[in-house]
Amino acid sequence: MKAPGGIFRSLRNSNYRLWAAGALVSNIGTWMQRVAQDWLVLTQHSASAVGAVMALQFGPQLLLVPWTGFAADHFNQRKLLIATQAAMGMLALTLGSLTVAGVVQLWQVDVLAFLQGCAAAFDAPVRQTFVAELVGDEDLPNAVALNSTSFNAARMVGPAVAGMTIAAIGTGWAFVINGASFAAVLLSLLRLRISELRPNARAARAKGSFLEGLRYVWGRADLKTILVMLFLIGTFGLNFPIFISTMAVGVFHADARAFGLLSSIMAIGTTAGALIAAGRGKIGFGSLLPSAGIFGFGCLLGALAPGYWFFAGALVVIGVAALTLTNATNSLMQLSTEPSMRGRVMALRIGIALGGTPIGAPIVGWVADTCGPRWALGVGAASGFAAAAVAGCFLVRQRRNADVEGND
Image (cartoon, rainbow, N blue to C red; front, side, top):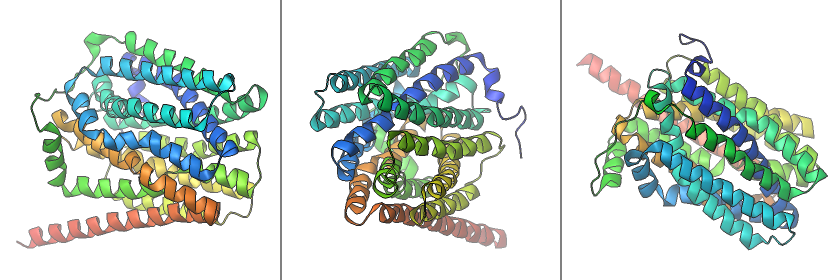
């Protein structure tokens, strides 16, 4: 069922329009950097090295959860976003300068990826909960979905542009362009109409606030189930840089342009999934089970792909399922959580979903190097099927409890 106001209803809000415009430009640069970084490491080293860089980049999402959640719930969110976005822009320019100068080494990529991960760990929960300040709770699911649409529309453009940039003028310039793109989102944050923001309730500063957040989540079976699903898929399934790069180079022997095109094609699926979510009204837990199952099926299709274009089609299926799942978990967790707890709950969500990468990425990279890229995709398929099983068990227990209460 479509919600009143249509798919793009959040764009009626002037602050959200300004934020979305700046974010779109920055997102294109972000995808350029992701593709360029994977290409740089894979072509000069190995899939295991790509996994190690991913581990360093996403590890801080879990390691820093006690502090990132605290910051999101206690500090001014707009000012914190300005600081994190500026830091990420400077780090991208640093990597670009080293690469353009021809002096970049793997350890430098590792260090900068870790620092980028630290900045992103503080940025992500604030950026996700800041949407509620822009549009309010009524349009929150729609705004979350439109954010994902922007991110994945950029995913269609960024990787293709990165591939052309790498081929034409070199990998380093993709990093430089990303660093410059952060100016757009910084400008949008500085030009927001402060009087029209809807500030979330700020939590009182007290010791043990992170433990309070953990206790809150532990007491909620629905939130725990979502986090287990996100851990499974985030750790072993959302390793697209490894899946796409190793299949492109190792199986289909593609060049930089064809590699970038695969990431752009996958974005067709993720953008479609985000638009489907934007057009929905009420978000239900029941949508998580089929999304996880379809994700596993898509990875299985990719693992068995006989050729480049069949693999590209499988990436579309994976993209639709992945975005449907992640958007639903985002909206469900925010809307069912007390406003003063949202920052900590969302930091935990992001930490679990992305923080498992230090575990999964090296394992998946090792599988790709040792057994082949197709087996690595098989690991992703297993993660989707396992997450679907977890959702199924929760729904069965929920139905049994409802039947027991109905008979009392």
